[in-house]
Image (cartoon, rainbow, N blue to C red):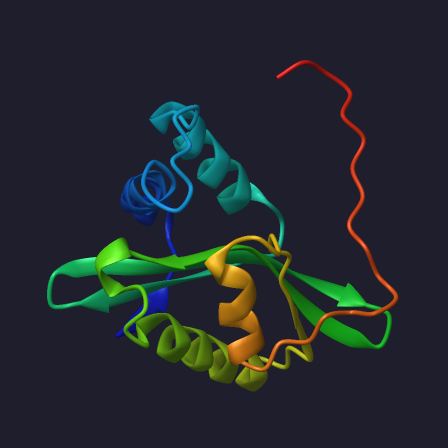
Amino acid sequence: MIVDFERKHIEKCADIFFDIYKNEPFNYSWVKKDSVLNYFTDIFKTPKFRGFVLYTENGAEGICVGVISDYFKVKKYRVSEIFVGRRFQKRGVGSKFLTEIQKILYKDGIDIIEITTDKNTPAFNFYLKNNYSILKNNINMIKITGDF
């Protein structure tokens, strides 16, 4: 079952995210629980926030959060984060979750779903498998302005 993401889901969302990133293939020892909670709280507070929670018999097991924007002639949903718990990965659960989200967004008049991912993670192939395309003329760029 998929429900709309509400403030009450932030804690569970952070728990699942934290569990994913502190383990293989990431092993991010620098990820701190408080920072993850702040991150998802900030996303939740963003104007035009839209999120989804995948529930199984064990409770919340998958999360998708992002923001809707009017992009000239189209409505776009920009995914900030999407994931399922580690025990559900590589079992088709993420693909089913993504497919259901796409159906909901289509019914809501969303024309484009945009996702950024790292080419060197399993997520890259996951999105390709689910018929997402690499934009040939676009690239993500950053400027580091501080120490971290």
